[in-house]
Image 1: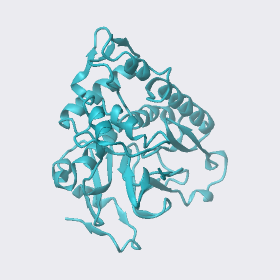
Image 2 (image 1 turned 90 degrees about the horizontal axis):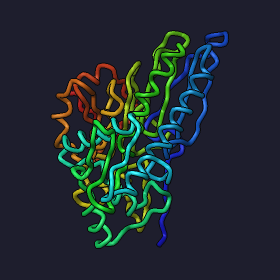
Image 3 (image 1 turned 90 degrees about the vertical axis):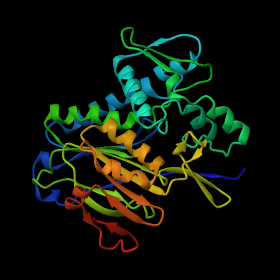
Amino acid sequence: MSSTLRISALLLAVLMLLGGCRAMTGRSAEPVSGVEFAMNTWVEQRWYGDEAQETYDDIMACLRDLEARLSLYREDSEISALNASAGREPVRVSRDTFTLLSRAKEFSAESGGLFDVTIAPLTLTWGITSGEPHIPGEEEIAAAQALVDYRGLILDREAQTAMLAREGMKVDLGGIAKGMAASVCAEIPRKHGVSGYLSIGGNTMVCGKKPDGQDFLVGLRDPRGEASEALGSFAMDGLTMATTGDYERYFEQDGVRYHHVLDPFTGRPSASDLISVTVISADGTLADCLSTSIFLRGSGALEQYFARDDCRVIAVTKDLQVYATPGLWDDFTINPSKTQYTFHKS
């Protein structure tokens, strides 16, 4: 089989627009920044302040710790232990892992199973995020689908244990863990008194302002442009932005793009009319989960999410229509060069 796996190495969903900092002098104006691979994606950081290096290092240590516990692909992780014990016995997990599993199950129920924390059998069958993708046959898909059911995740809060009801079931926290990680890491720059941003794949957290007092502007990635192209930008101090898009991770075969957002009801990459969904919230876990759920539901469900008061949403359809929570337009500066898109402000 001939296929090509394409994973954007940097700025999977956003472009940080950081001009204007050079006017400052002194240590605080010189950022500590870098890009490293963690949590199965690229992590970018940039911090300003006397304790910028400590912030950078503490965040990477936090992400490595979370990855060690939550990764589907590490044999020694708590999630791998849970998956290996499916259908046999409960596994005691750390408090953070238990909390994330609990929220993931709640979100799964809220979405009616469209977002499903036990999607791993399908994730592994397609292999799109593993580096070895392929198009599975009908029997493979059906066998994997039969093992996807969030109701089979059994949680015991008092014992702090988790169990999967049937052998072969597996948990995949990839659709929620990065948003949670962004929220957890938000405490680190506050503790060190620095400003800057953290981008974990499609999840970006911003803390404070630039050294010259200006806002950090977050660019919304053009889902049909290059990684450096943005549809527009907005300020986002103290919030986390999560983006799900069909351009993030995918492979192509015979001219067809197969992206990583799998629909548990079809067993295949989502066929909704959306190509990008961004959710902005103070709760990174919520933002991460909702961006996936909305992407799977399609544009017909947007109005119910626009009405929520715990997040703001901006979505792009296959025919390049851009819709957003009405109040978001007041803070969003459209890139005037993106004339191929229609921005619906009402």
